[in-house]
Amino acid sequence: MTEPRRRAPGMDPEQRRDMILQTALPLVAEHGAAVTTAQIARAAGIGEATVFRVFADKDELIKAVVMRALDPAHVLRELGSISLDQPLPDRLVEAAEALRAHLGRIGSVIGALHASGHQRRRPDPDEARAAGLDRNASQEATKAAVAELFEPEADRLRLPVATATDVFLGFMFSRGRFLGPDLDSADLVDVFLHGALKEAPA
Image (cartoon, rainbow, N blue to C red):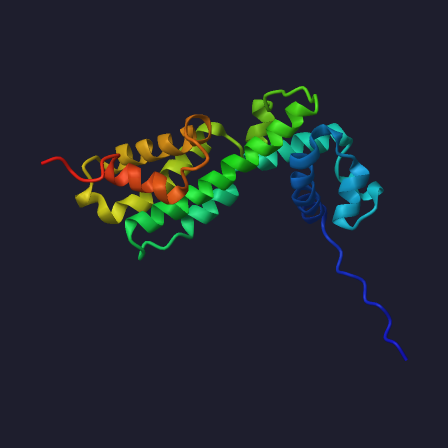
């Protein structure tokens, strides 16, 4: 005799919203605004009607996906989990990879929406604050998280920790625009720490 199937535990509205956004983000990054709510529902293993219990319409869902892509919470957790017991170069390579993934996630979502003809609008400041996406606060939190990685070597740095942090983040934020794809994170960190010369001048 087979046992009756057990139903999966129900989700509260916030958990359901989070699950839908987590599923929708890579689909929007792939298809842009051409993605359908039916596709998202199938990928999430739910009925399409469930999507509309959480989001009023597809536009609201896409706006929430953009907010999710911009949200720095994930990258801040990754930066905070980097062990300070590692040598500084290893810490910075991990930080560079975390920041690269975060910026790539933003670029893929915004780029796919633009390519599919979606009219990009700046997030409403009040909506962004309600979602915990204050741009200045996000930048300061990112700086603080990266500065912690420099702190154990503060006495060895040629620059104050805050300045070294700003320069490092400048490398990272200009990476996609000015630096070629062949420069991986280890190379970038090596140039940042030791310069472009193979050896110091006499």
